[in-house]
Image (cartoon, rainbow, N blue to C red; front, side):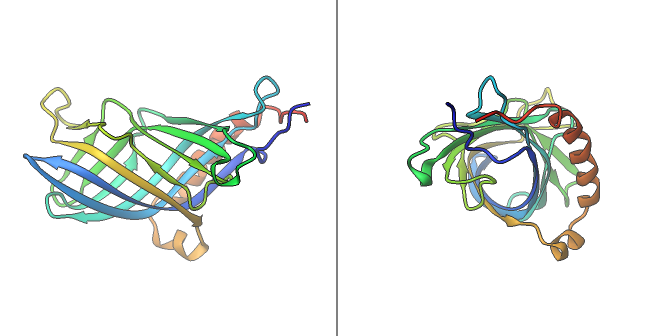
Length: 206
């Protein structure tokens, strides 16, 4: 008998804070941003009841940088940000789950009128105790270095590199928070469309 440790599939609207180390023009800087993101979780499948598929549908993280000015992290709509979460150590609550995302960003440089994208995925992974992973920390692996390119000239050299990033998931987004953030209603529509596909997956039997 297999135990299903996952909640039913669904959509989570969560607060998110991040810091990242960037390399630009030979200098490095640690930047910070906060906001919200939307994640859709599939049901576990009977074939593999210890694993679910996850997709980040929307992200809205704002911050300010010495090198970049005002900026906004969103998800690249042309490249899906997918991942997996699986039971890793069910007897140890703090590391009960193991998860990762292969993230494709759009980094909008609001004062420069420029948008940067990554061609290679930024892999962010971590261990956490519950789903949704409120309070969980996800990080790039040490030594990773991912180029960020000007979307208008993607074949040129990278404008900057992402050297490290750490993301901490907060609690559910509140109604007041929703009102202050742009594009939230649009993210709900996207989540609803994705849910039509996710809902065709049946919960795992126990």
